[in-house]
Amino acid sequence: MSGGGRERPRVKLGVLISGEGTNLQAMIDAIECGQLKADIRVVISNRATARGLERARRHGIPAKVISHRGKPREEFDGELVTTLRGLGVDLVACAGFMRLLSPVMVRAFPNRIMNIHPALCPAFPGVDAQKAATDYGVRFTGCTVFFVNEGVDDGPIIIQAVVPVNPEDDAAVIADRIHMQEHRIYPEAIRLYQEGRLAVRGRKVLIRDAAAPAGQVLINPPLE
Ligand code: GRF
Image (cartoon, rainbow, N blue to C red; front, side, top):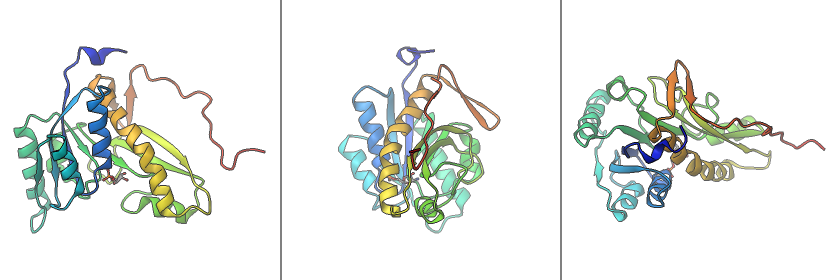
């Protein structure tokens, strides 16, 4: 269904953050240059100090703080649901949002919450995935955009990018390398959603008219 994005409605996006918000920025940039047909209805942070809030405000996007402190997870998630629904959000994008979502959120937006994880899922779930990968000695790691389910970094995978890891790389170098690819694949995943090309079948996400990555085998170190 190439070109379907032209006729389909713009995605009403709600973005959840906790920190820097460079993935949020990548979405904003993709929207502003016309590559992504979406409107960010709201950016919500659980932390008032999240720098991503400022990024949102700078672009005229409503930015809201909903603190998780002192609340049961379900109560916090209930507040998220109320706010997101109230603004007509149809796709939620977690972008460095450092809270696990309870069934209250996941069931309110089934297959309509995306997240990005800085590893090649299902490897290295949870926090500090970049350090876990470098400590482990893998030759490749990367990032994954997936639909959130009730597990941890476990949902159906939409898109992944691979980056090489060399033994002398530290976690900060790898984190930067991954971040650059995150900024490419997250707006792309949302674009595929907006174009109506994603269908979840069990664990798999089928992508209509996706090009086959033929010939893109990576070997590290390269064969001599
Ligand atoms: C990213 O590395 C993402 O994979 C992880 O948190 C980080 C968020 O970065 N979930 P930013 O706030 O978007 O810059």
